[in-house]
Image (tube, rainbow, N blue to C red):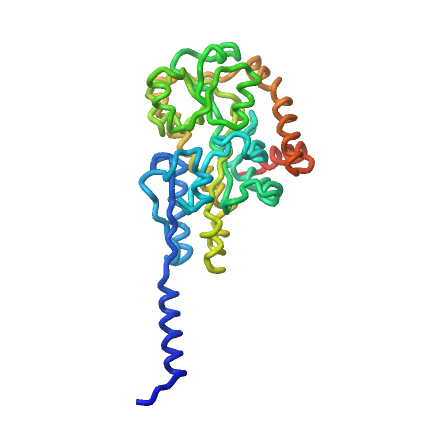
Length: 337
């Protein structure tokens, strides 16, 4: 049978096309929080959506534990130890500045509203300035309103808070604590159980969800604030090289499911866990009080200092009119449904 180069080339092309069509991109996905945690669940849901939307061309291999401790997660994704994960910006103090806009007191009572509004502000102002340079930022989000939890006594004033030792997660709550004269130590969330169970710390600043997620049965008192004492900024991210190597079709899938879509996904999950944890706290006997006007005013008296300090640092990094950006953020929170 005579050799037909064109026929051979056609067969080769068909084989290559079939191989390409059957190829699958697998993302290595890491989480430093338990698999039942709201953020881990949201990350898995996002992965499931990616697989479905791409008709199976992309899928996630979710590791049984994080590739590194929480504070090293950003660098782990940047350097390719994991393809996808999330982290708290404040776990590496001083590294991220713009993100602290989402961490001020009294921003909102819902993780959905603060997360979606934060994503809108981030996309408009912070992403173009390279706040998370080195990774593909898929979304930003916050947890629910921050609360003062402890195992010792009701905290009804700033002075009573100053009499206890608290674990905190960094970011603006660190700055607020310093301004209030509170005794706080920066530690990642998963360390809370050991710190509290051994008495190294008396309490922790957390959203409601965390009392259940980290099994903090020793917590007996909670002081809540309208709009939260603080929030925490998270970034959900992908290794940049992994994203860059995707086909245009698959990049479009990732982009469609990122941004505001992913921010809402994480926020909704957190709100559900907050609500479930509040029910669990009732059974646990946690006594909840709402900070009175005097306590709220004591925090508000430091608010201008926090905002002024942030605005000055943000302006140095290239953000124009930081105060206007903060005001726009608050306005966006009020709009989110």
